[in-house]
Amino acid sequence: MKKRLFACLVTVTALAGCGADQTEEMKSPKYDGDRLQVAVVGKQPTVREDTVRFTPVSLQELTPTARISSEFDGVFIMKDHLKEADQEQYVRVYKNLRIPTFFIGSTKGYLPFVMKELTYEAAGDNAQSYAFGYLHGKKELSWEYGLYNDINTDAHITALYSDVFRTIDSVKNDRQR
Image: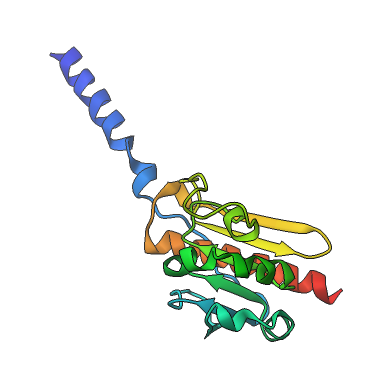
């Protein structure tokens, strides 16, 4: 009887610990840096930060790139516009912008957007990621962002945006030096 009770206690204890990490939300700090101006192609994302301002733009409005680069700190292209953003005429736009461009909701990387010969549909999937960033400056820079535990929740997405804002702030500060 004692052996069964002991076995039950061990089993219950073991099961109590299973899956605890999956339901636990990540504790991610909000971006608390300088005020950022972000152009957004598509629906404005929901974020936690009060210091980030979004301005809706169309893909066509990303030219002239010099004006966009001087008015904004970064560009978000949201998931519903990724196939359109893959069109060949925009390759030069992304390469000429002097601010980072982020492809939100893309699981195919940034290469389909900056290589004429690779289409979004033909690019391989990277299911581990949720967003990619790209900047063609003195050197080519890219960033990849995944969701915490690869779980798509509103909290994980807003935490990811905070990471993107820190990247934008870092690029902005590097440009100002």
